[in-house]
Length: 414
Ligand SMILES: Cc1cc2nc3c(=O)[nH]c(=O)nc-3n(C[C@H](O)[C@H](O)[C@H](O)COP(=O)(O)OP(=O)(O)OC[C@H]3O[C@@H](n4cnc5c(N)ncnc54)[C@H](O)[C@@H]3O)c2cc1C
Image 1 (cartoon, helix red, strand yellow):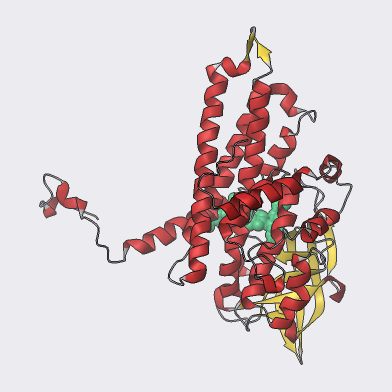
Image 2: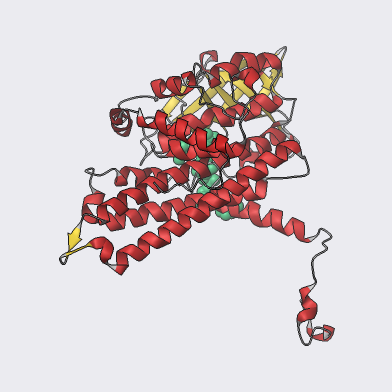
């Protein structure tokens, strides 16, 4: 109802319709079962998305993708976001893991892992966060030591979505003890049956039914050929993977916030207080108006970041990271505000399980925390922007527009 498609190309409009059709086939019982933690992972959902050729949309047709732009993928992610964040994450994972495999993987790795992931036949997960912290990624303490033609991994990763069930994981490990983090990490494809141990399955506030686990490697041997990219390329690969990591979070949050707002609007059009529909009260309808503006602003920013990501594929001078970080921070903070306001509009019954708003709220609380917390996003955004201040610019120097512009003796900085 609240999508704005007039900026979209026909390809983007078509993908929205196609994904909507898929979303409409999803049995509500799957969502309810996930929320009760009755299943380990939405296996059948991913298999069906794969059968419909809806996974990894932007990857090359050679590997089963559709070579679509990021803008189309973001629209697909928005529509899947309607189902909540667990299914959204399972849908996004091929895009995140696929980024590393398609850009840095060896040909056999793409055949063996990327293709079946896009078909929905293999489940993947990514292991960045450790119990010691997720924000300080380059402080990774999981180690990989070379022994003959194998790497021996020791360490653990925390909060791994799909950790309990994935067929394989992309794991960052320290391969140089002395270099600074961004030059010391390498990325490995670690298959579950190589000896990954699941030591903790988390009881989460929301985002249930995704087998989110702490996984442990104890002298786990990985063949040398399973390294993705070159030795100590982890930092470079991480920077690329963070584009899908953050854009998928941002676009998914738009869909989740959108349905929460739609639910609240429908409710406010029926619920009465003091003899009037509650939507007649300014306290309610101004909240709706604010949420609509915020939703559209967030979608606009996500769309612009997606355009930047598309442009960067053709022009290496375009760096989408600032816009992608802005989009992640703004869409997820805004998403949280919208779901929260939607619950306020629905009132007490919204706080029960009669309506799904409480599940959407529990889900959405995760969005500002994960895939790089929003504090880390702000750190990156200002850092990238300040870097640009140093670049030569042709813009007007507005300092001279001040009446007393020439009084240099008054321009004191320290
Ligand atoms: C349900 C769930 C699923 C997840 N799935 C995955 C997954 O599949 N794979 C994976 O690798 N990770 C996953 N994560 C991990 C997630 O990305 C991290 O939780 C997140 O990056 C934050 O790391 P942390 O929890 O260790 O918090 P910390 O890094 O300990 O941060 C704690 C707080 O301090 C703030 N902070 C830290 N450093 C700074 C700074 N320099 N400036 C300002 N503030 C700062 C943070 O913003 C945060 O508010 C998942 C997490 C959850 C909860």
